[in-house]
Image (cartoon, rainbow, N blue to C red; front, side, top):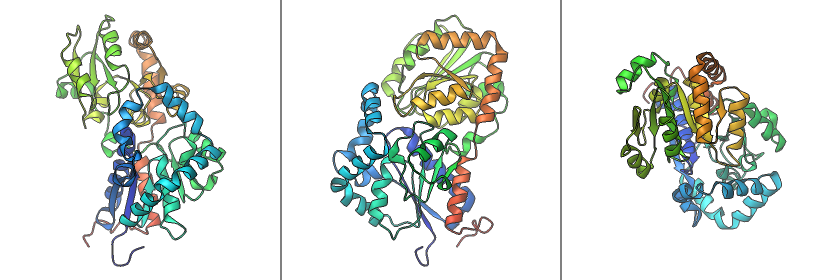
Length: 384
């Protein structure tokens, strides 16, 4: 630990999808809530800040790359496995090693956390043997790529038991693996409250079953087609659509005439409130959104997935009975009809969501980080 300075935590992430940034921000928030002034934190997008071409362009290219889902899934499966992962990192090292070395030199830390698979082995190799503790926070729920796992990691946090099993299959020490859930921001853990009062506050119809459609931070998936199928199904519902950063989609949706109440939003920080006010979530199989829905007690209809890394998320949702897989718009409508006509079935999914939720994941990660750094919770908020 550096002398005469507060301990410093470096969190490595990348804006290749919104989930990595959200997880990093949630962990930093939890560290600050637990330890306040006693520790400093820093987030670094390791691709954008230090990686050479073409790696530094990956965050910008990601939204277009996932528009070819079958190619994405093929590349995921072809690169998975311990031997292939080692071959990938070994082949990358001559090209990215210098950049990785500059990153760890320019961002000295007393503990390093990665929330992205590609920042694991490369950064550990750049750090060498005389290094601070290194913690891996796996942000894929089930289909965890081998690149996440390096035996040199001091601790590996995973969201589910299935992710733990995969880590063990990749020769990780079971003693290093802890199941904590998906790290999410504190605002997602607020009490659910009265849905009708929340809807009235938001300007929504307070008496209608409300369907929340979310396509992730980039507004991915067949949002528009699915929303139109629900709106023309003659169901007595209201729809709330989150288009994310996809401004073209938001404008397209706002310009349409809808036969039922429809509210369209772009990227928003109010998603926790929206989830607590809604009755059903229709979304792609992103791990962060699934974890947030469980905390909100919000039954899930998955209408899209990214092949490879999100395949397991669908399995998790179905096996835990917290939602269903409905890949076609008519499948989504059929499920909604069933849940609306049989409210007891939907309420059972609500109960299952509450049972499967892990709202304290970020706090648990923060507390372990505090143990590594010998931080004292009681005196953490004294200004020094």
